[in-house]
Structures are given as structure tokens and as C-alpha cells.
Image (tube, rainbow, N blue to C red):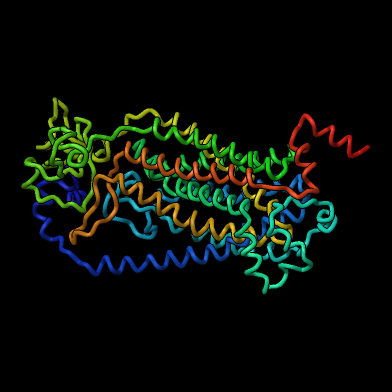
Length: 525
């Protein structure tokens, strides 16, 4: 069946682009206008951080004030579990929205499908829904009292586990730290607290790993296993939702059930961090080989070690193909080509609803009825079940580390400085963790790119294809370094921690399940 007139106008065959290539001109003003929208996104992120940060500082301290020490970790785990449940759920919803074209009120004349690399999903719908839901929660949050019923009694029953250092003596002074003029004095004392700073370093590196993996895991899955962007986002969310939530809940539950004191909570963080590192090393073993791509990772003679690998070859040099028009086709030889034009295809037709190219000068047909068909070649890598299983375990152990670190920060500082200490921790986490994390991971992923998009002005755009083994190795390397720093920082915090004398006897016995009942019997008698 022949192509109709509308479809034929956009088919990128050699003959078609030969006559249209001269029409494409460079317009630098287009790129400059588009770059201005970056500041709108930066402003949105700034406002999002201003509104959301108090929930992680004041909200966590409010939970810790309102419940007993034994149950505090469980409630904090539930609260932080919900905070990661939302973004993970957003991956699933966002994956569905990406199947909707970005211009929902416009019918495109170009026959694009969600698996087409030129497809743009309706990403903005999710932001609109979250804006509406956030305003619906304003009134319930304003109804919360300053202190919940029974908070005063709970505070009187608590015993401080703050690190017993030289700086901690100043906090014992009456009303110290309640005035704004004590701000810099309190800040200096917290920065001199070695246990607190070690926990801050561990929390920062963990946040760097979490934000980096959460941001780019769908891209990793998409490229390693040859999936669409929407399906990769759904699979990433399907792992993050149960893994993050279960990890946070289990971390808080273990602390609550075993009634762990501060030092053993820190040791638990180090243990779960080691386990998450061992699970994350599966990235090296679950990597997939590169899909053969003519002109990108091998030449048109299927030689991957050729000295000069370029999209332009003798078989397509007279086609005047457009480099910025990425429309991949899969050849009958299971090799992917940048477009039908770069494959040397002269005409096209539709067979069983699929756009196929019968004659392509760059492809040896080997008796096939067609030389190429639209779309990327399917991946033959069968390591995805192994990868997803270990990735789930790594997510669980990683988020099991988060709750103990937060609990340790609340325990190693004086009670009247818990909110301020969380604010300082989140300041470091944001500046040195969640902000540079995606930038660092994005830079590492860009280093594995083997084919960049370049427009008519020669400006570099998005990456069309990556080196899969190199991407896996680089991500594993940066994740391993960050995890090792976390482990060293947690081990340092455990070694330097000195409990107050009033809780020293409790710590030696309450963290040992076999002796806990002896300590309880002794205190009763």
C-alpha cells in the first residue's frame, strides 16, 4: 500500500530530504528564546523548596516532641515514608501522562507515537494537579495546635541522649538558645559537635545518591533495556514506591521494637548502608551490551573498531541527510540507523500498519522483503529481572538508613535544639546533596553519550544514544564512592559518640535483647 500525501511529506527517505535539506536554515534567535524558560523552572523549584522544607524540619521535630522516645522512630519512619511515597507515586502517574502529547489541544500532522524519540509527553499536567492538591491541604495544616494533648507529660518522661562534649555544657544554661542573639553561638556549637557533623556528612552523601538515582533511573532503564520513556518511568516508580516506603517503615520499626539507644542506632545505619552498597554493585553485572548503531558505535561495514566512525558514509553521502532529524529505523540485519535517509532508503510503504523501507543502499537485505522498518531495534538483553530485584533490595536498605540517621540527629543534640539541628542538617543536605546530586549524575551520564544532537546552527542538544556499559560503570563508581563516604562518616559518629552519664548505664543494657529484662528487673527492685 502506498503512502498517502500527508505521510509522504514527512518520510525521511534519501530522495525526499535531498530536495528539502536546503530549506533548513539557522535561526539563533529560536535557541535564545527557548533558554529563557529555564529561569521559570528555576523559580518554580525555589518556591517549591521554600514551601516544602518546613515539613522536613519543624514537622519531624513536632512528631518527636509529641510521642515517646520508644515510638518516635516508628512515627518518623512513617512520616518520611510518606514523603518518598509521593514522589515515587508521581513516577507512575507521570509515566501515564507522558503517553499524552504535550499539546493536548492540538492535533499534530506528524504521525508520532510515544515510542518515537521526538515524542514530548504532557509533563505539565502533573504540576497543575499537585498545585491544586497542595492548596487543599493548607486549611487542615493551619488547624494543628502548637502542642498536642499529653506532650508535656511525654517531655518530662524523656531522658536526654545528647552527645556529652565540651560544647554541650553551654546548652545547660537557663534559657540558652531561646533568643535570636544566641543564633551564631548555637550554630558554632553544633558545627563543633563531631557526632552531629558526621551524621550530617552521611545524610548529605545519602541524599546525593538518592536524588541522583531517582532522577536518572528511568533514563538508565530506558537505555539499558531498550524501553520507552513512559514504561521506564513506570518500572522505576514500581520499584521506588514499595522499596522506599518499606525501607522507611522497617528502619523505624526496628529501632522502636529493639529500643535502640543513640550509638546502636548509628551502628544500624552503617550496617544498612553496607548492605545497600552490596546490592547496588549489581549495576556492573546487570549491564547490557550496546545495540549496533551504524555511524555511532560502528561503521556501516559493521566494524566496531574502525578508526573513523561517522553517520555519513559512501552509501548515503549523496542524500544530504539532516543531522537534527532523528528518526531511527531498524534494519533487517538488526542494526539501528539514525534515519531512513542515513540508511540510504529511497522509498517507503506501509505494511500491516508499519512504515517499512524496501530498498536501502546501506543495508544488506539477505533475502528479506524489506530492508528496514521504523523505530529502534528491540533489545535482546535478558538481565532486567535480575537488575530490578537487586535494585529493589538496594532501595529498601538505602531508605532503611534514612530513618536511623534522622533519629540519631535528634538524639545527639540537646532537646531544645532539635528543630534547629534538623534545619542545619537540611541546609547541608540541600546545598551539598540534593542539588549537586542530579547535576553530578547527569554529568556522568552525559560522559557516556556517543551521539549528540546538533541543529543547523551547530548547537549541541540532547543525546540520542549512549554507551550502556560505560554508563553502568560510571554510575556504579559514583554511587560506590558516595556510599563509602557515608559508611566512614557513620563509623566515625559511632566511635566519637559519648552518652550523658545518666543514660550510660541504660545504653549498655537496653540495646542488648538478652540482658534487657535483667536491667528492667533491677530497676523495678
